Image 1 (spheres, rainbow, N blue to C red):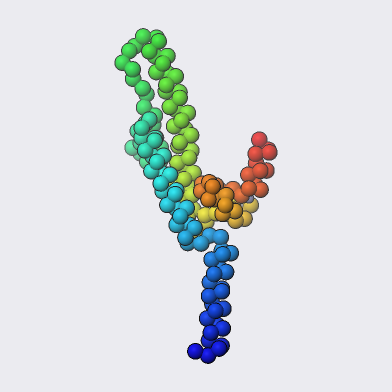
Image 2: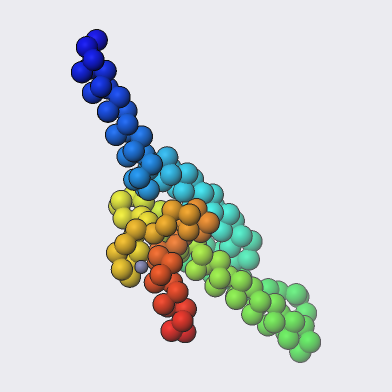
Length: 148
Ligand SMILES: [Zn+2]
């Protein structure tokens, strides 16, 4: 091997590691995120399955079952209604999380994952690691929460 060959080889290696370091959406990183999102998805679906049933027409939609205590007195009905309201709000939260998770998984498939939906800039991987469903960068998130 000539000196030039050696030089070219080390340059190629250097470029490869530089790409891995600076390209923040590495395949490894994406694979890791995807795995976490898939785990999230099955956990959310299981949790939602506990409090409701999957909508037959729309698989992403869950219907919260109306709890039946068996009694029909006014007291029983009041308990049922408040239980239902609790489950409904938990259900809504889980549903929103599930929707975000599915959206993030779709974005990975489409190759648009990790890009802020407002400014189009890349989202800090640390933010994505902490919250894989993030669809906004920190700057936009700050602007948005200040507006509210
Ligand atoms: Zn942004």
